[in-house]
Image 1 (tube, rainbow, N blue to C red):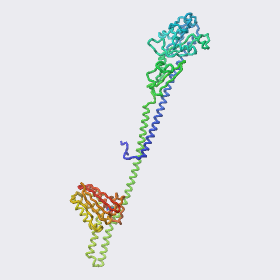
Image 2: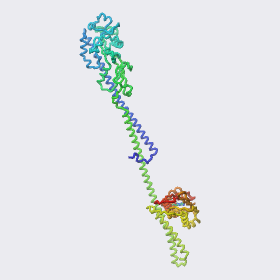
Image 3: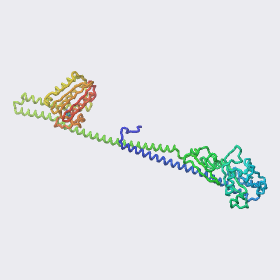
Image 4: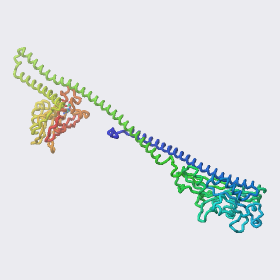
Length: 597
Ligand code: ADP
């Protein structure tokens, strides 16, 4: 299929500018559409991202709250159970089914405060309840604590029994804060004592202070005196967060850092190896949250499986579709403009044809009136002459049939019949040309002889109108293969016109060979032809504004001449200036094969 059925039609500047504007508008709309869809998809992604992020944060928060509640309940149980035995405490913790309910929890334990003097005297009331405690590491310190229970009692947890957490600066800081502020406090990142020497999983602990039932705890000083122990839970960060994540369906990478600094040292957990910076800007975020008196920094970033709605691919599809649509619109506009122009051109063409047809009909009407005039003039003249002679004969005029009168009459008859014959011949030629029957019969022609014959025949007219023969310039011995009769007709027409429109001034004819062709020029110094008529005079019935009364003629001579010249593969042209004369130049090949006129 041809893409542009009107490819021949060229559009003007204005149409091209309009097409450009349509394309530009299309591109602007496409860009906006792409931008808005991109933005909308980004928003949807962002909402989905935030939803997933918040569900993790909520879960984490509620889980940590549950742990804190477990600590508070355990402390309440201890406080309400004076003289509680180790076995009962273990039994209570086991009965809470904490570990089943909250996977990820490493244990729940109790660390008893052992003031230095009681290491020797053992007179702390609780020390009597748990007399079998031990304290490690050894060494002299101001304040001792000892883990007396850590449930579940697996081999890992058993390793921690007796450990003085207060001896470790990180744990001490949290325990001190818990005691001073009477709050659940979370420690910084630690490696739990129950870990193997080769294991260094990041972990942390949460402490809840336990004060003496009967002592005041209103002031800091009171609390420092009344502290008897800590209920606490140790966590392996990895296990805790994995357990939380396993309960959620989210496609996020989660990195958790202890404190506000993001570094390898502070890192508690990474849910995958995905690089935070690799995620799209709207699909990553950094949050700082407060849990049990500590700040954690959590970085969320979308995983490749996030299935984001927005993608370069989708944007590209929208943009390319818009682009194709814009191009299509522009193309449709161009084609429709061209179609309109084609229709207009056709209408113009039709109008031109109609005008031409009208002009043709007018010219034919003119021709008919001129032809009747031309035919009638010689006939009228003949009729007049014969009537005059008849009257003379009737009157028995003795001179009626005198030699002189009869000769004059016969000359008149000859002149008028020649004129009539010429008119009829021209009309016949026109009909032959129209039906393609103007046949050329090629023969070897002596050009010099042919020219002289034509001049010879026209000599009476030259003598009568100009008073002398034309000036002839001709190279001798030129022969050509032409239709002799028709080329005579050409010369006859050109020379007759030179006499008729020559203003009685001398006429010149030159014939010269130019390589393989012969140039014939007929030059007169007559009335000339107006520039606007130069193109028309070779058309049928065209008389270049000449009226029948000025110079007689049918306007057929030059038309027939041109058809004969073309049939010889030649050319005819004219140069003329009004009032100065005309030069008709015929160029004919020396050897012409016949071509239908
Ligand atoms: P006709 O002479 O019968 O009118 P032609 O076809 O021979 O028809 O000429 C067409 C027209 O060309 C003439 O009517 C005349 O106006 C113009 N024409 C032809 N030859 C000459 C010439 N030599 N000088 C001026 N006008 C000429």
